[in-house]
Length: 492
Ligand code: SF4
Image (cartoon, rainbow, N blue to C red; front, side, top):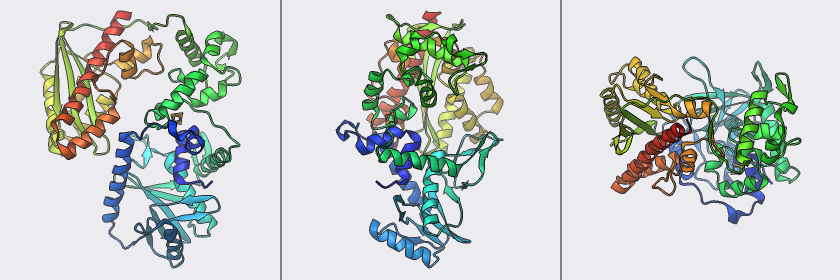
């Protein structure tokens, strides 16, 4: 079975998916997630826009059938075309379709056009890191070129969403603590992928954030639940599960151990797992397996109760780089009867509309200086800092820091749920915890990803129903934050 770039991409996200895509019962796949479809469409659109703007001559092979493309790509490289778009290369069991092949000294360097950032992490003062799922795809192209005797060296590039060319170097160590090169990572991914395709390696699934958009989500949820898999414990991921598995295979087994028996000083017998985390996971296993599992406080929480409480949530389209909605559920005097939903919507896909919504939201908060603000995760603060930098006439950076000062604004996720509470659930998302507390979203498929897809639809059809669906979803998210706050207060 050929190894393609998309198989390697899937392998990096989840080896189990490679096996299921090839040998799984295809009738048990979930329908394609509309958000995933949107990502594909946006990716294709972005690639077309970028290629239409290229200001140097290039050979475009995109209109040709696949079998002709392979021949035409080889002929083009042999005659030294400076830039080839949409080529197709293959050798042995490796098959690749790099967006770009660029002639450099000694041969060709492959590149991809990506509708995402070329690197991950990094900040104002730090560099980002190459994305492993991009790296393995690009390395596959380099490998094919090498085997064909047409490579200019072990390097590649990404033209990313910011219009930058991000180089990928496969020969240098990844860092002082990580001597392996990206080429080593590729070789290891290639060997394991081949073993999965040959059925000599049977990979296990693992519950992770990747699962939410995967078309095997329902299948794997059942499978992992039946196996009582350790990754169903919040924050216990694949690598820790794998290192624990020979001694402790299930949540029930973890609940039954004495963790101190696996701890030696500042270490545990499990690679990559320290004593505190082992004790934490053990507590979670005990909770999940108890006869009457109930949430509890790990540490005291002090949540003041001012007259006005604002439950705040934003919606962002990362592909348009646009914050399109700021929603707030406002409650007075602790009475749910007093609740009202206030929202600021970008009525257009333009910087002016985004700025206007941001300015209105900032003015709204400024008019309620004594209100407490509750939000879920640092995302809102990150986006407000970005918006302030983009529209610095709206308010100052200090205004944003004051708005999110912990004396005024509480990140319920980072500052309360993670630090001080335990829940008998598989994760700590607002959806999971509010649903556990009995809250119901009006929409049958609520998610941030779905909201982005609805917004994309609204941009095209401007339908009032679609807009209302977006608003209702945001309002329910704000109200869920209130339900969670009240639930935590009740625990206290
Ligand atoms: S649902 Fe999760 S575990 Fe299953 S194949 Fe997809 S990503 Fe892997």
